[in-house]
Amino acid sequence: AAAAAYVRAPRGPANAEARAPLPPGCLMVGTGEYVTGFVGGGAANSDKGTGVLALVCLDLRNRGKIGRLGMCGTNGAKLPALRAHMQRVLGEAYEGIDPTVIETFPADGVVKRDAFKDAAAAFKPGDLAIIFTPDDTHFDIAMACIERGMHVMITKPPVKTLEDHLKLVEAARKKNVLCVAELHKRFDPIYVDARDRIRKLGPFSYYWAYMSQPKHQLETFKAWAGKSSDISYYLNSHHIDYHEWCMHGKARPVRVTAHASTGVANRRLDGVETEDTITIVVDWRNFEDGSIGHGVYTSSWVAPKADVHSQQRWFYMGQEGEVTVDQAHRGYTVAQDGAPFASVNPLFWKPTPSAGRFVGQRSYGYISFEAICDAVAEVNSGRRSVADFDGELPTLSTIAGTTAILEAGRKSLDAGGVTFELVYKSEDPFEVPCGMRPAAFGAKS
Image (tube, rainbow, N blue to C red; front, side, top):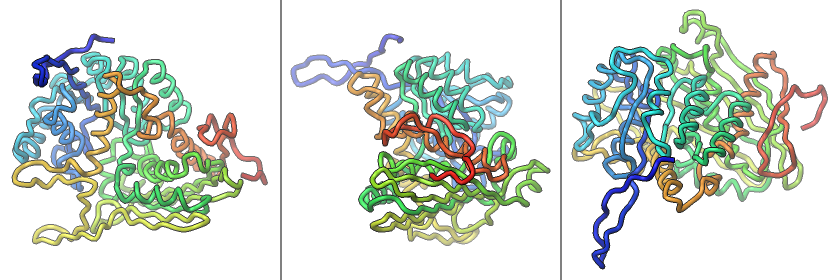
């Protein structure tokens, strides 16, 4: 590993000079809506017109939690327009936010699909890569960054197959680096409290979740929708992970079946064959008494425009109680001339400036990124080990069940609704799936 660089810290009371390691550099891989808000040559027509990740990283840099900042795409021809967009929606909107400090890859005018390799080589072991790119690119990018010795955060789903997931886990273990998924719902105070209550409601019985995107988003997703991924990987990953987190050590997923609706997306995507709405049904076996519960997870990208960009709600029933959450509606609505009526959720993301400054540091969309930066600093300093963050953060070594469910759901759809069972090496409650196979007719969970 590269030798640590140091900066001088303030003198202590005995005039001894303390030294602290420089904060890690951060490479953002991806330049799209969630990173910059830049879509189709302008600001996204969504609740993320400013982007999220770039603004968070610029603020974390101001706070001394990360140092050097880079951003990598594939098409250098659009980078001048992208930088102009960030200057307009970030640099001119928030006092103290300067997007010109972000180094961009590849060079202006250069189109290079594997520019992430050059970008990773330009950063140091111990730095952090945050990956927000189409699902089918995650594995190659993450592996390149891990091999460089960088810590990695990957947007959900981290990968599309259990095989690739386990390969990343092993690569990160060998390099002794963090590899986590960006799952911000784990930092939503309501979701956290709900999980703490769910853990006390006895064995699991039933769970359902629904999450949507408005159909106009298909234009934003046109480059990859139905080609490299589907709506289940994109949205069901949120609440499947949340449910898996709630069940950690209490129950395991054992059987997966999927169903789908069609008719809208293929017309809007010029004939690309893809589902409008996907439902995954999962049987879970409780460790406490061997009983079976089941979860139903539905996602859609053909919803109409509404008061929220994304409908998000779920219901949980344990054998000793139940919990209901409507994540999209927090009892806060806004109506103004020239804008549609909106139910807003600044608990997730607060881009609205206060006295000209960005003040979204307490939103869970921000905290998710801050948490990995803090963890990287702890690991780099030697104060904590990579393994210490299993359970505290959504490390890939602990969330393989979510990837297994999503892949089994895709396999079920491709096989006409065949049920797949997940395979485990042992009955250890914390064991993650190691494979999957079509379920035998009449087999029990």
